[in-house]
Figure 1 (cartoon, rainbow, N blue to C red):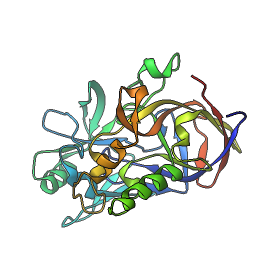
Figure 2: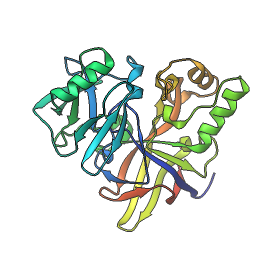
Figure 3: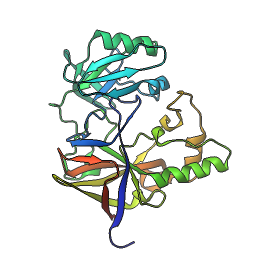
Figure 4: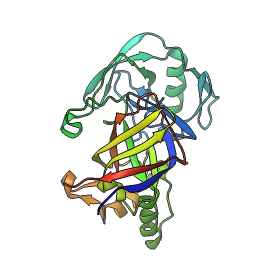
Length: 285
């Protein structure tokens, strides 16, 4: 493969609360930790450790809506919860994977809402932007790539062609097609072959305020979450079993991968929008 590859942003997505439903965006500001409001909040247990769909698939049913000054949360059987975007309560410590980070508790009303819906003690916390949580330098090199409550990197990039290939294989086995909501990407690209994002190095977008330059640094190894139906929270095995048949990735010691984790090289405080064209370079390892 030679030369640049023309790509486009098919869709943009943020997940304001880690492991809860996502929002599809027409436009999003890039900040130090990725898309604005992406994984800015997180549900934690009584010890301050994160709770995810891996243990409680029901979290998938919590659907946020971002308004001008608030985030509105809805879930089956629950009254809507309104969370102010400009208010937090007391500072706390929260644990996401092996990282203990600064955060702010969002108060007893939020805690009661999540506890009632999940059937266990839970609280909602917001990432403290003064805390610098960095992605693994083994993958980012000399770049200090910040992230909030995402698993490990600021952005996840995948493609419409990757989903089409998975759905082709699922349907050939008699399974229903799935949506990209199961994979929780931030940027979905078109213009690529199936899983063409695997071979990309950098993506460049031109905005009115200057360039946005992203670097794809690490294949995303998938857990059980893609087998959680984001509409019903029902769990299965079809997606994981199908991916295992063709997506065992030698770069990740045979881990099942779908999508690429990315970092921001240039473009903080610049906006990406759905439909925006860009160009990508290939990585030659």
